[in-house]
Length: 365
Image (tube, rainbow, N blue to C red):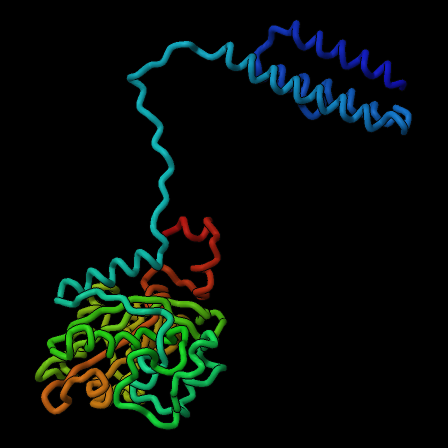
């Protein structure tokens, strides 16, 4: 087909379209549908000489744009010119908070109701607050570069004298050693003591991002923690256990119980791992199916580990300027993602899903 003949066919198609009186949907199918007149004409481009095909393509693209624009005009002309103001309006689509943000809000409310104050401290902090003030020696595994993200400081700090082999009682005014991405929210413990001028009582809940070099189905390199700290006269393990049970009942339901297992943390003494009873087997470790019982596949033991806790180490109190002979305290710190995924009915087996940005997943919450 010569380019001249193609132009004639395009002209005839445009004239035919302008004389149509059918509705917009019918015209759209007839002219721009899969088997429409435009596509039939477009298939003839292969018969155009190779030298003219570029020009033919431009003419066909121009034709399609003109037909599309005229279809819109036909729709506008056929639309009603009046509006019924009594018809209810269409509600806009509204999103919701991310499930982790929802958990943060709920956790804050639970602890606020028993007198805790919500605070937030740096997520990039000095080694002093993240490790040294928490009674961690220079050779502690957590201070290894394979466990913690260290931040390189500008060259202007090269004159700051800091020897990790010689722990200080107090950090210098300008720096506290190296900078790190905080591996836990415990860096807020001594900061809170300093904020209150080392004057208890202290009842703090700190929620922030944390960073560690771990990535698998139950760990992410960035995650969220909430840190509780209570310091006053006469604080003991019974206060800690009562606080944990209160949280378990409020967050998981009245049937949930907490359990303390002896452990070792540098900044608490004595230290404990905290477990909550499984919501599927009610802490028995067995699921009843008729007359038979099988081992609970979700917890395998009746309990879920959620985090650490313990009585604040005297050295940490001293680092915050508080007399450990006069005051005692307890602290606990858990990952929000881990705590949230243990809720009844969720059964999330990979916390990385929470950061997948997959709306099909997030819209379920």
